[in-house]
Image (cartoon, rainbow, N blue to C red):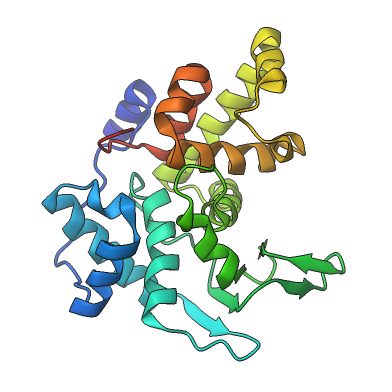
Length: 248
């Protein structure tokens, strides 16, 4: 009851990080983070130890499966896991229980869901996230173009997971999304500014799920631009993710 009161007042969990012991990445895995994952560099030393623990825990929790001859390497496991951990770093429960398998293709793959080629997709029925490794890497090559396949697909999984689960972080995420939806429903001027702006790519307006995925891509890659152009939406996204990281 104390935490419920705290959440209602502050819109964030009473605590996030509490571990009996911290798992560690080996030296090679840590170098992958240092050299290829800019978000990691923004963290304090204590936050880095929590981040590494979560990456190691996430990697152990999920089955990584290579397709079309792709061999699952540490680069693949660490960078994909780090993307999930980044998005859930403000959550207490960071595992995204709706994902049990992560299938990785070397490049675009044929999807039986809608009979076309995809770069990524999330299938909640089979608890499977599917990614093109080539396109996943491209998402991090350009750090401020607001296009990031890993962030986009993990956001879909987190969104659906928040609807299914009732842990405190999922509840905050889901409730904050409802607040954002209500804001957009009643603020006609805000909707018009969104439609007229070039900051959100057109794909964002496909449906509410795609809008959120694009919004979080923008939030991670160009937070200051987002905050300057649409502070109301930025604030709701920051609340959903419970981000308290330098630069955000």
